[in-house]
Structure formats: C-alpha cells, structure tokens
Length: 347
Image (tube, rainbow, N blue to C red; front, side, top):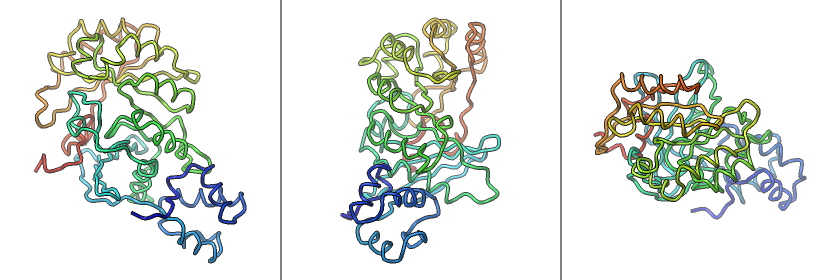
C-alpha cells in the first residue's frame, strides 16, 4: 500500500489544507478539486492548469485512486452490473440502470453487510470492511468513464448497493459531500437517495447534515415479522423508527420513501397492507412495493401478481402514493437484494 495521500479521499477543506501545506495558494484548491473529480482524469499530468513543477510535486506526495473493473455483465433490459476490485483485493458491485432519458447508478458503501436481512443476498456475506469515501466516489467515476457521448447522462445516484450506508457513516457523509459540492462532482442533492435499514441515531445525524433523499427499508408493519426479516428491528423497533421518520427534516414537498419487499406468505396479505397504512399515518411517505427477487438459498418466493395488486390497492385507497417497482437486471443477479460480488454462485 502506498504512503502517498489519496486526493480523492479528502474533503474540500482537507484538500485546501494539504495544498497550502505544500506551498500553493488556497485558491488552487478549487481548481484541483474540479480536476480530480472529472472521470477522465487519471494522472496529475492531465491537470494543465498547474505548472510542470507542481504536477511533479503532486506525483511525489499524492495519487488519484481508482477501481479495477473485473467484469461487466449486461442484462436484457439494458441494466449493467459492474464487478470492481479494490486496492486490497476485495470486491464490490455497482449497477447502472437505464431510466427514461437518464441513467441511475446504484452504488455500494461496504464490502458485504452486517445487517443480516433475511431476504438479501449481500447479508449472507457478513461485513468484511467499510468502503473509504474515495471507493464510494470511484464507483461513479469509473462507470462514467465507460459512457459515450451518445449515452444518456448519469444524473441519479442511489446508495442501495452492498452494505448499510449509515453503518459506514463517516465515509458515507464524506463521499456525499463531495458528490454534491460545487467544487466536487456537482450532483444535485435532489437526485441522490440513501437507503437505510433503519439505524435511527445515524438517520437523525444525516438529516441534520445533508439534504439528500431518504429511503427506509421497512418490509413489515409489525415488530414480530420485521424482526424475523431484519435483525436491526430488535434494536430499533417500529415505534422508534417511525417516530424518527416523523421528525426527519424534509425540504418542502419532499417525502420519505418506504421500501417494502413483498415475500409470498410472509408479508403480502391484505392485513399486512392495512397494518402498513395504519403504521405510516402522519408520516410524509411514499411507498415502493418491490416483489422479492430470488437468490440462491433464500427459501423465499415473490408474491402472486394478484396479491401484489391487492396490496397496492389497499394502500392507494388509504391515500398513499404507491408504486410497484419492478427491479431491473434480475437475469444477471443485479436486482434489489441480489448483489454479492461472488459470481461463482451463478456459474
């Protein structure tokens, strides 16, 4: 491992401090920051607004980290799944999803995950380690480098890949600040969504720090079922979680997205729908219903189509905004809950 400083792992303030420490003027930090977060910048020699002397000094003391693409798999629906190798040999996955007129990229925040949700393939890996801020950011930069001038723009980022973003709180916040910074990657905070299993203290901290969209993986409206599916519920039960959602600071007209994965015979009954409608009363909510996506050894099945429609109809009659989200990329194990970074399971 290099002892040099990875400039892509620094916040803008840290970058400015480093730049002044080596003798450059503070205003140079903005120039450098805008260069290093461009996807096509791989080497300091490409930074032509710095003299040859300063580019040489940068090479001596710093570097620009990057990810290695091990494999890209293409779905019949246009979705692409990227398998990345990190500097220490660990692997993660990201998913590029075609939308109407743009791309959405689903990125990872950890190698594996500690939450052990029963319906999620990633949870079976356990947690190997947190990603650094630069490793979160480099997923985006690396995918951007694969796009051509004729491709739609990559405008939307969702932290819904491998890992629980709020369990890797510090690095996630550092990465998000770079994503939305005018001196960084300049994404709109309106187009960034963070999904959590419901880590209540970190949810509160997030709301006080950044204005990104919040999605909560709910999946049940009673504590018995949710604890069975999501062990985190034993620490932060529904009453605690929902209260945190009610006080979460939301910009005008914004709502929290509640993700509800429907599993046949577990949480897809009309009673479960009525319980969900009652649970979310008073919360600024919209609901995404996601049919369960099978993976090896899960033991679960997606709901019958009729039960899915009935579930949605009950919520619609209760005046909620409800979408059925058909996950893309299921034929390449890129759909919600299917990421694992070990493709041997499907060989």
